[in-house]
Length: 265
Image (cartoon, rainbow, N blue to C red; front, top):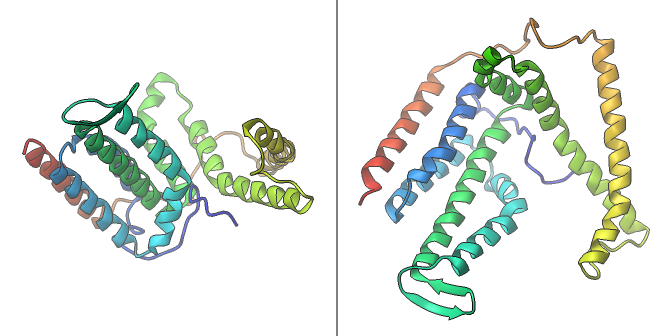
């Protein structure tokens, strides 16, 4: 089984699990915008403590969240390096051609690294504590205002729920195909960029065929069960707000107020 966290629900019974998925999704989206209020070491420390508290509240192992960050660690480092070598300002420590390391670049690189990491961690908190179907229901609720403009919100929610459900399966299938190719002597890490790209071709073809077969089987299963669109359908899982959502809302408002107070210090 792959260690990709996207779409993987890990059962638990902590406070975060008892929250309504709509509340978790809403706070996660707002967190992505609120994190830009942090602009100094104090505000970044505050928002980091909030993120660590959310992780601790799940009562899951730290390794789960490391597995969520690990696939994107290269992208985070690359983005941070761009800030480090191309951002100018303040005291200059080193310069060569178009590359510059300055005090302003160092600070911004650190902030970018923290920002991306915290966003991924908070997203992982929501992903591992919420079932894919519940996330889809929450997204459908969030997109309800778009129905005024004749946007097929129910179909969009269905596509999202299917995608979240089959992303882990797709990664598992990729891992199986790669292991099968390695057992036949394939080497995906040898040679230059062009050779590595050619080595991936034997993976893409069977993966595409398997994905197509899965999609056909899924559509056949849905038709055989009388699926004719989500409009007017009743739901097995009824979403209800609870006191845990009020608690999380209180902490989130406290976070925003603290960031607004300390961002000019």
